[in-house]
Amino acid sequence: MSQEELLLDSGQPNENNRDRKSRSRIGLVVTGLVGGSLVALYAVAAPFVAPALRKVCLPFVPATTTQVENVLKALRARSGTLVDIGSGDGRIVIAAAKHGFHASGFELNPWLVWYSRYRAWREGVYRSTSFHISDLWKVSFAQYSNVVIFGVPQMMEKLELKLASELPRSAKVVACRFPFPTWIPESTAGEGIDTVWVYDAKTFKSHLPRRKLNSEHTSW
Image 1 (cartoon, rainbow, N blue to C red):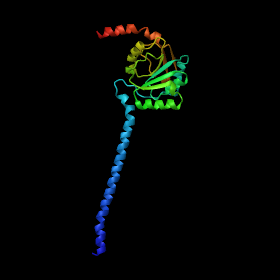
Image 2: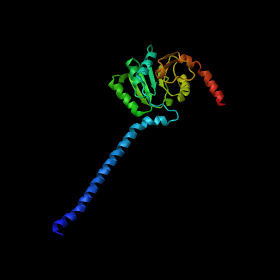
Image 3: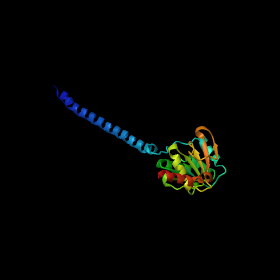
Image 4: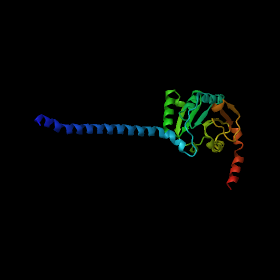
């Protein structure tokens, strides 16, 4: 074998090693990118999915344009403070602020709260809006004269008692998608999934003492 052939044969293993190392580095980079993407996806998605894992969940389902219009129609003769319980991406709060309300939203999902604050700033109503990361059961709504709730059936009965005990007699409550189980609405607006039910605090607060007494008897 000539000297030139020996040199070519001796160089081939080195080239193979370089190829394997190059493929290994590429594999590590791809693995890192995929892993990082999955972590980022989880970080973004987890706050949206987590509410569905709670015993009584309030999942984020954006209000339709018709639902927002029906809420504003139900409160067209009202003013003052307004709170949206489970405010999601802030569209109810922002729309209410544009109609003269001092509006607040309470939401457990921090990503949605931050996004709501950004939207309020972008749409020029950040001075008349506020958004809070908070559990609705740990907040008092006594300062609000208008309440909007996109609830789920599992929570509505408990929320009846909370609102009846906290709200002033001048308050109005607007329930969207699901009505309260025992309260009698004074009016409704819309139809189907866009229906909203309007409740007068003077009516539902008048039944509060009797309901509390019945609840105490039941627990004996």
